[in-house]
Amino acid sequence: MKNQQTLILIKPDGLKKSLTGNVLTRLSETKLDIIATKTVQVTSKLAEEHYKYLKDKPFYKELIKYLMGEFHKKKVMALVYWGPDAINKVRNICGATNPEEADSVSIRGAYGRITTKGVYENVIHASTNEEEAEREIKLWFKPDEIIFDVYPTKTATVKKKERVWA
Ligand code: DAT
Ligand code: MG
Figure 1 (cartoon, helix red, strand yellow):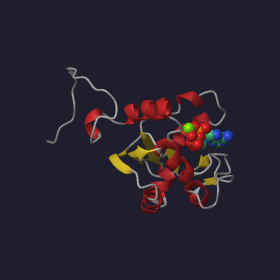
Figure 2: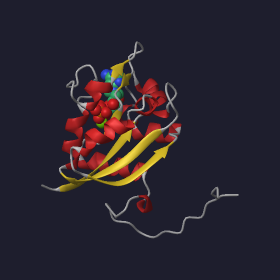
Figure 3: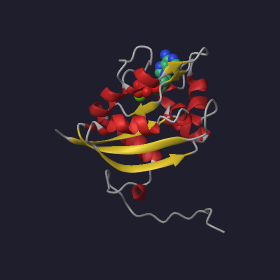
Figure 4: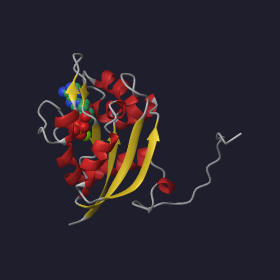
């Protein structure tokens, strides 16, 4: 089976409900390798870019607020999993997009809900295919944040102000 990398996000409802341990335990059933992890405060720019293919949907605005943590905690845990058939292995454990339709033993089936406003609080994001995984991993991680190069890299001089420790 082909080795693949896939982006996982534990969404703000998962963090608020202290589900991180449970979700990572479920994902460890895949025997895949974690090759990157970080916790981030999601800006509107990042959320909008991540879900840009849904921008014409009626639920888009609420979806962006949800990913930014406006309904829970303002943080998301992002991880890259790597190994044989990673994309499908992870998606199978996540379950269907709609948490009410997801298999009850899947992560979304066990822990997700639909709010009265119609937001799918489905705990976890996982890439659907190799093309999506590449776009998403490049959006969420820089090459040096992943323990090996999953895509080709180049060296560029980037001049910008950045915050440092005082
Ligand atoms: P997935 O997250 O399973 O890849 P997707 O890419 O189609 O599903 O949609 C991204 C997110 O958008 C999904 O996790 C929850 C939300 N969403 C999708 N369809 C929805 C709907 N009909 N109503 C409310 N939220 C929806
Ligand atoms: Mg998707």
